[in-house]
Length: 492
Ligand code: NAD
Image (cartoon, rainbow, N blue to C red; front, side):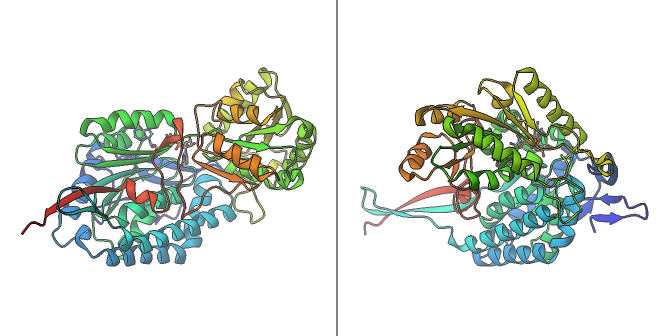
């Protein structure tokens, strides 16, 4: 077992390399903290370049095995992924409890994410034998065809906000295509990734196909991004980290896919169903305590309904249940760490300093039972100008800025006045206006009269500085395959 719980209640975590549960090569560890109690709940191996090297060696051996994973019939690979999906579902309560204690997210959300990860594995189980090439009518006499081949050893570096889900988005397509993987979770949230490494072995993935290395981004993560034996790196995290990964990956011209930050707009026209918008949209920015790359952190509202929207949105925000993540009724738990909470509190001060009007929230909850945790009440700023830092920078916490506009063109211009381009929503009963706006907004995933823009079966990713490539759906297969063109001369 990679997760071994001692009598003190502190688990001792191990990495999964080459099918074995292992410590860091130099034996170092780091502590994993529950942000709702400030207590240490586990120790994890502090992996570094030597451990990444061991994982790359194991993954390469598994890839090169003449009877190994990449040579299996695609359907057999798919069935193994389906088995992993079933095991994740079977262990969903255990995984959800780990995620809840590790990240401070509400247990109800954690359960949803674990089931979401299972569905992603299931989808790519089905996709494995649907990855095929083309025949192309070239001008020379003969047959021209393409083969879709795995890249080899791929590095998968994921963040702490949706740990198991982000791992599934990368492992699923990478494995379906026949690659071998090194998964590195964020140091704040290693628990479910390590358990996933164990479940993959139980599902029947051969040793070395799924390796999980824990350790700091600057050493273990950077070693994956720079390793000459890794053919591709897929990363989700901050834009500045993505830029560094691109630099590190350039040494052997790795394939790179990046899912980065966002500052997504929720555009509300005066003709929209304002009541439905206000009832549903607090969750589009405060879910996961605002630590969501798709968070609709700017509400752009047409001036005639500005005051009404502020009033309704503030009212709905006051109803959001902030509390102990373990409580079934909690809708918003803690931030992932005290450092992250302090960062968000700094932004509240910055907003006030810039002259924005804090309508509701922004302080720790009054409940003394929550005094030990990294809590912050969801905050709504009105009177925001899009040039203010709170409207420009990704806060990654429960803070929303409301900004009025006068025309459709101004709404689109404001939506695009950010270096990011990940997500967003448009609210209007005029479908022509909504579609014109959707076409004008430079972002990868949009929704109309809904905040739902993430679907397992549909492409997900960002424009501009929000990323490179599209995850999910069959688009993700492109990120984990090489295309080989073969021409056959058919002259007799
Ligand atoms: P982060 O960039 O700090 O860390 C992400 C991962 O990268 C971690 O595993 C970390 O250890 C590793 N890392 C850090 N420095 C590294 C380096 N120099 N080389 C290699 N790896 C390194 O991000 P985070 O704080 O964990 O996550 C929050 C960010 O993730 C936000 O900006 C958010 O918008 C973004 N995010 C984006 C998406 C998306 O799909 N676009 C999804 C979720 C989160």
